[in-house]
Structures are given as C-alpha cells and as structure tokens.
Length: 281
Picture 1: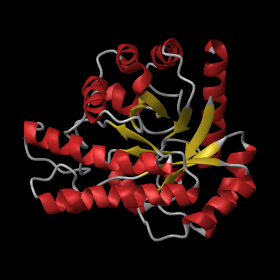
Picture 2: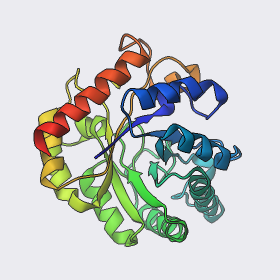
Picture 3: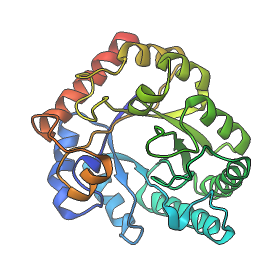
C-alpha cells in the first residue's frame, strides 16, 4: 500500500511556499503527494526533480469546466476538453506522476436540470477514450472519480462509473473511489467497492465533513474490509479541505474549521490509515 496526502489542504498550485509542508509530509511517514493540476504552465519537470530529492512519489488531480466540458453538445467544447486532458497528462509525465485522478469526465458544478442523456454518456465515453489513448502512450493511468449529485451529474455511483470504464474499454482508463462521495451516494459502501473490484486503482480517504479521516461518520470498517476483499494494493490518498485558501473554501463549501491544524490532521490521518491497513493486510 502507498499512502499519500492531497496538497489541496494548503494550495491549488505548486509554489515555493509549499516546500516546508512537503518536507513535513515526508517526515510524517507519507509515501507521496497528490498534486493539483489546474495551471498547466508551471515547470513540472523542475518540480518532479524537487519531489525526487524529497523522496516523495506523486499522483495528480485535475477537473474540467464549462469551457472545456467533455460532454458538451458543442463539438468544439468537447474537443477542448480532450485537449485539456491531454495537456494535463503531459504535465503528469513531466512531473513524474503515475496517476491522473479527478472528475475530468465532465464539467464540475455544471447542471442541466436532469440526469445524463444517452448522447452525453456517449460523448463522455468517446472523449475519455481519446484521453486514455494519449495517457497510454505516456504510461499514465487515468482514474476517473465519481462525485456526489451536488457536484456533478454524469457519474454519481460506483456502479455507473464501472459501466462507464468498461465502455471506454482502454487499459489506461480505470476509476477511483472516494469515501466522502460514497458516504453520500451509496446504500452500501462495501458492496460498491466489491462491485467495481479490480477497476478501482486509486482511493481517496476522506471523512464525511472533509476533515480528519477516522473521526467522523464514514463507515470505515465496511470500506477497509471491502478494499481488502478486492485485494486492493494501490494509493490511499487523504483528501481533506480547510480554510487556507478562500477560493478553495468557497468551492468546497468549507465555512468553519473542522480540525485543530493541518499538521495534526496529517499525523492523525497517516496513523489511522496505517493502523486500519495493518489490521487487515
């Protein structure tokens, strides 16, 4: 198992101010970090060397917007979505990230007032297959994320996401599982994990209030037991959000502090994950 920390707890973009945090993340026992990929114009190769020097592996996370929505009825917009995904994949290669995760299958926070149409589903499959072909050439694994119904409408469950992945049908295209979203959308988290099975190649460990994993209402035993049953042995990445960035707090709807401080959250989270894994694996 590999244990990671999502940098969105501190920043939406790599910058020199994050360097002391990275050193601490390594000292606390994490194997790597999940890097926000929203600005594709940074020198990611240079950052990759910095991470190598720190001994931190990395994954990356990105999103799509209305301007580059892969399921837009406008073919030009869909093409921009594929191009943006390809650009993100290139950044992953430069950074040395092995996985690109997130809800880049459709525009985050955009709604039509109804569920996905057959055409939107088809456009999504076509767009993701093109993205997967580019990822395969660079050795990057795509792991799309399903979100709760308040953030997106294309993919909201493990069952639908597994079906979507199977229709894309590309070896570089898989799915991730997030305990926060599953806590909202799934009737049985363990059953959701077992149903998706080997398609799950990345896991976000995230509490129901987005704070310290293990200190809220997520059905942790059901989640960890099921991950053990499917022989999961990949990344477990803590995804927590706070008040450090006003624009990110607004996007994640975090209005109050849910934990003592970021350092304590990180230490408690790594201890929690390692304890739960040691009990089962």
